[in-house]
Amino acid sequence: MRPTPPANDIDERIWVTVAAIPSGCLATYGDVARLAGLGRAARRVGAALRRLPTDSGIPWHRVVNASGRSSLPGDGDDNRQLRRLRDEGVRLGPGALARYRWDGVAP
DNA sequence: ATCTTGACAATTG
DNA sequence: GCAATTGCCAAGA
Image 1: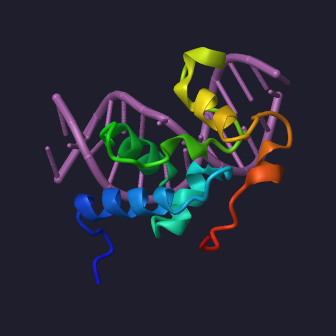
Image 2: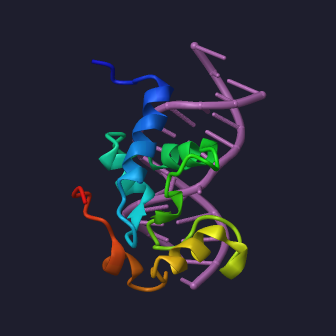
Image 3: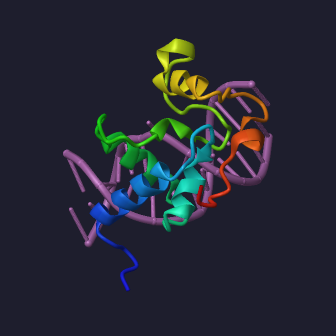
């Protein structure tokens, strides 16, 4: 067993996990990390998403921080994430996580 | 191998 | 609500 699998696998795991998030749902970095089997490496999720190519087809915009807000700079139309989420019918704010948080159960 | 950084999380003041 | 602090884990220099 490899307590520390190759970075390649880690990134792939994260991408797969994020790709499994159904449309109109949200997941926190910590949740994705846990679902991906990374435990508390929530930061690794952000790093993986940052390395993510634009044509990867990964719905990275469904990943938000524990506060239920976008971790990227810019509010409103400046932030692609918020635009995409709004396009899917997801509006961030108080209770957004309670409303759209993904259980981790396969869609 | 060591130090710093980071699209985080939780706690405390 | 915000700033500072601590914890966690891996990547990058």
